[in-house]
Image 1 (tube, rainbow, N blue to C red):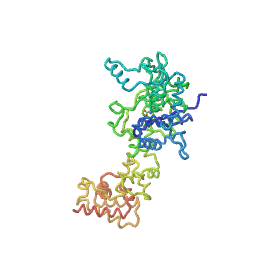
Image 2 (cartoon, rainbow, N blue to C red):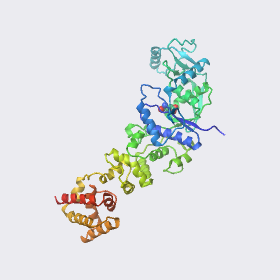
Image 3 (cartoon, rainbow, N blue to C red):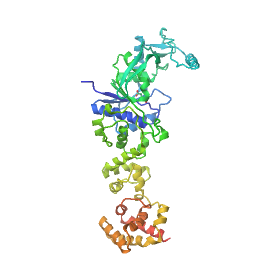
Image 4 (cartoon, rainbow, N blue to C red):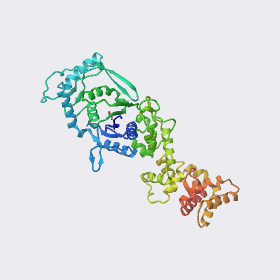
Length: 473
Ligand code: GLU
């Protein structure tokens, strides 16, 4: 039996959790859950100028919101924190020293000026600059300012097999003695990542294919450290509609932006899993189904194109699938963000039910149902067209009928609307539409009886009176 799967997601906290990063995290998480393995979260914060606490928070918030929990890490008050590379400098130093002792790495004393000058010459000669190994055989003198460089073994090429891209070969002539630890003791990405993968016993590295070019040197580093080279799965970058890499130009790219726009986390993970992975022609997946069916064998080698319309469709499908009570619960913070105090409003589940088929997002649900919790904002066009003197008798008929009835229910309303329509030889629409404008301020809403029931008799009467005044003016 093969060893239990150990995978990781290793974001650099230099910005929010990008939708592409979230997809990488999701696929790793799914594979861990599918196999009963372990999912590690590691914050690669060694770029101190670009890393921020705010970005760390955004990443953790995004992960939690999506439901991607991690299984290990330092104890932070009863739960696992992620690993932070900047808290692990001693570990990288120890591994670097081990490599130096074994002759697999060495101290390099070249100054930036030296190297810049050599780079300049290479540029003038139109060739790639590769470090020529100037310090390879100098004695180790820790008292001199130095970086640590990996001593590239003599080799013709490096080959590894990628679960998504197949076998990949890199000629040794394109590699150099990379710096692995800077003069200040902070590791460079390739070394920090490899030491972490070694100590965290990662056996599948699945990440964006923008790192595929780093993999050859990493393979050599695993080997130098005496660690079995993990499997790799490099995921194609998500593209925008114009087939360039998805970026802000294409619209929102952060996970939290989708949360704020009123997407359900279920819909976001569902949409993301389908970008470059398929299970027959199934489009809608619960987390449980994703976990059950996910495998790298069906991850495509070509990039998925981000399609905002499809993402909305997936969201809408998920909105429809929630129970009204659950949908109402999810919508509360969005009402609050829109300045509507809905806490404790017993109508919420019925509101959710009335709008469930029509709402594309939770923000849309709030916008569409706003008039149930706030004064009517009259659409001038709707008013001009429907709140006219001709409509006054109809509005009056409904108003009087409503005022006269002791209780309001759907059957009673249906009879009232039909009676008013029949009394004036009008189609039902000619009655419903002015009433709709009166009650909602616009021409689109759920069924008119539902609207009356949700507003209640008193509020409906108030709005009809206000509309009658407008129709007469
Ligand atoms: N920290 C890298 C990034 O955010 C990921 C490196 C990796 O997964 O090996 O791009």
